[in-house]
Image 1 (cartoon, rainbow, N blue to C red):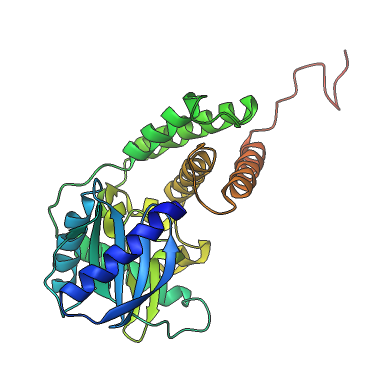
Image 2 (cartoon, helix red, strand yellow; image 1 turned 90 degrees about the vertical axis):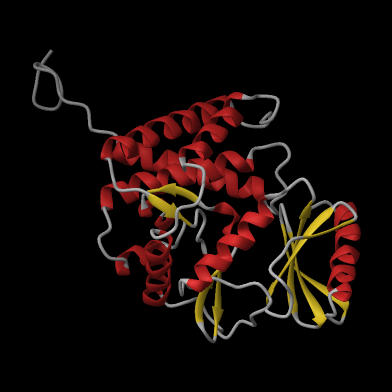
Length: 293
């Protein structure tokens, strides 16, 4: 959110918490992206604030409730208030249980993989509407093609991203892996280390696709502890995800701190991988190191 939006969103969250009987007169900004994540004090509740036009909040609340009931490792809404979406001053606010981090270091890969596997197991039992992962590819393709939205993207890199999006999406489809409901972005920023173990947050990103698409968002070593991974499919998903998130960083409206540097770094990784995977040219008869012309 822009600073002008944050200055209005914080008072809205505090006022809603107070109206529900939760003492709240201070807020700590934990994350600011398309949504604002706050820790409200002294009630110690996690508030997620988004523009009122973002109505996916109600879906996220309901999905979290169903996954929690199924025993999945996800963060739950705060039990002191009804699981609902609250509106004030042009914002929607949802209130969640705040979990203080208990791990001084990263979550151990076996624990991360086990939590993600349990989440996927629970998600397979749910029948809820969700976009397909290829919808993200379509949006990324539109950005690549729209020079007004991505004016700083060099022509060669524009071609590289477009080719990678097309090639990897086609390869994943041809692989024909089983698909199911996914978290959508289970990267470390969306996993909390709590005394209850790893808990996934930010369910607004759910989509349908192969589990390898989710694993592509996690650190590389997580897949080593996840059962039944299709390694070829995972590699294609990793390159596809890299192309998608690199494209987002070139959007003129992207607000991710240091986003342009990351976009350049990810483009370099894509370029290096394509060079590495390109088959070596065959020598023609009468040419090359052992032939004559």
